[in-house]
Amino acid sequence: MQSNHLARVALIAAVYAVCTLVVMLFLGNLAWGPVQFRISEALCALALFTPAAVPGLTLGCAIANAVNIVLSGTGTLGLLDVAFGSLATFLGALFTWKMRRRPLLALAGPVIANALIVPAYLPLMLMGIGFYTIPFTSISLEGSWGLMYLFGLVTTGFGEAVIMYVLGYPLSRSLAATPLGKEACLDARDR
Image (tube, rainbow, N blue to C red; front, side):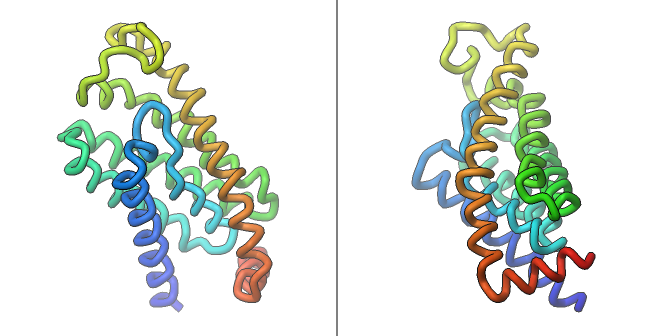
């Protein structure tokens, strides 16, 4: 049973990391930045089916964010995203697993965790890569952390909500309709 769990963790981590990096490579900064739609976050719906999704998604997020340090040139500031972005994914996936009996509520976990955590460090990262104003405004980032946090709270929360409810929820419904998904749902509810 332990090796089966580890295999699921590794598979989920790999799929999350690859999905995130593919989006970044082919769709620009859609997976990072002040306004983001990280399509791979839809995989947080897997936490409705297996507890292996919690460490798997966290590890996948850490890997993708670490690779992004090299690809985007954020340098050591990128470590903020590795640590705190992965923490947001962990907390969101954990909430999803704990609330799995109520899927629509459970999928709010990643939305809330990312909306609250990511904007706290985003201004530092943005200034580190050359953004000096709040995106789409002329408001300077310097000395306006509160405004940037509010901007990030809204934009990150919105982007995450779109991903979780437009992609993640249909993904969970599709998976639940498969024979393997039905078995996983029954198994997850017993835990």
